[in-house]
Length: 157
Image 1: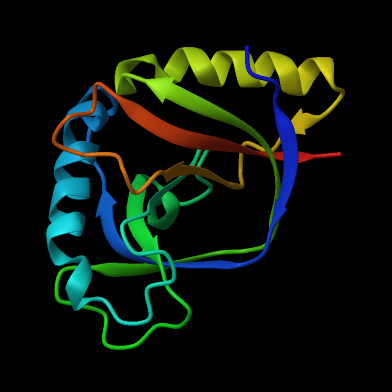
Image 2: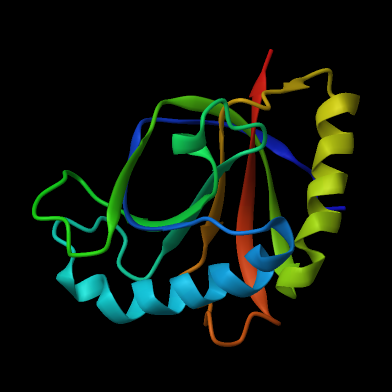
């Protein structure tokens, strides 16, 4: 396993799409949303890292408004959000992080490795905080078999 690390991130502002579907459909619906976002990124103002997409979700969402998966791009500020897109503000948070390289269907196994590392290091996962998946801009959502994505699992302690 590539060694995990702890990172502190400041507030993130995202503009993109919310994906809400049955659990088994996320693996199919998230790449579709990522493709739409890539096609429409030019409509979004104040993008900080062109081509880099960020996924966000809460393991145990405390409300229906926070349920689902968001795929977006980070912006400096919100202005004129494009039609059919949404905004999401992620508060500052502490994360355990690990890099995943490979097919998207193997991300679950990388999360399991990260969760073991969190436990071994004496941290506690925060199931009601935002987790992130930061996709390298070189990724092609149409070919999810070769992904580079940094996984951020929110922690306390």
